[in-house]
Length: 82
Image 1 (cartoon, rainbow, N blue to C red):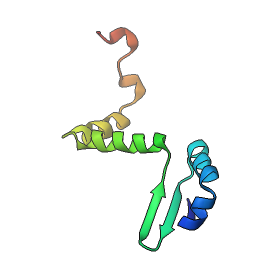
Image 2: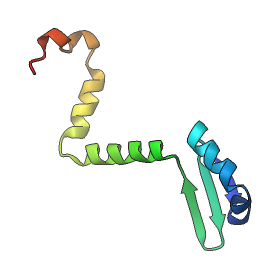
Image 3: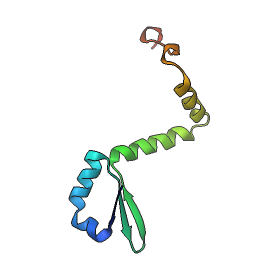
Image 4: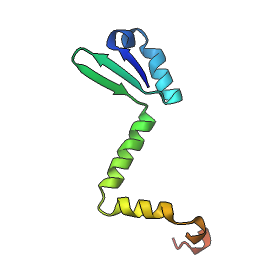
């Protein structure tokens, strides 16, 4: 994570945004009133999806169970009924 002052951020906003979008580099922007963090839209949407999924009762446990299930124990495409 890059840390910069708001003044430096203003001077280099284009390159910092480009680095965040292209390389997923977070930017911590410090001000006298507090700090802010810039992340890419892709990462933001991923975080929002994670928050949504873990807010569903029982979903967190189902996801953890799914991570422990060997791929051989999952359904193949032929077994799925659409």
